[in-house]
Image (cartoon, rainbow, N blue to C red; front, side, top):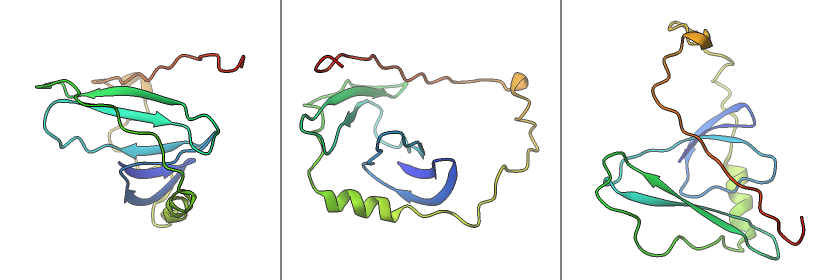
Length: 130
């Protein structure tokens, strides 16, 4: 995953295998889909909590030749230094300006030809009555 924006600010484009995204944060990432055509796990889990909660999903290539195999990836480590080092590696891209020139007219939202929609959905489970 290449991080391109954090909290609405362009970043120096670093690539990560895993990201710590804390409560209320927003990241924009580009996912490079260059692996063999099959299904892959996407795992999300809590960190720095007494009870680790984990959710998994499946990333499916349109021409997938096989389903996910093996157990889902494990939960997060307890290495706090790793999390701090990752946060320190995020840098603002000072050469990236605000909104880009718009030669294609893409800001005319009603005229955009949507070719693909990805919808991420979750459910709100009750944990310990909350």
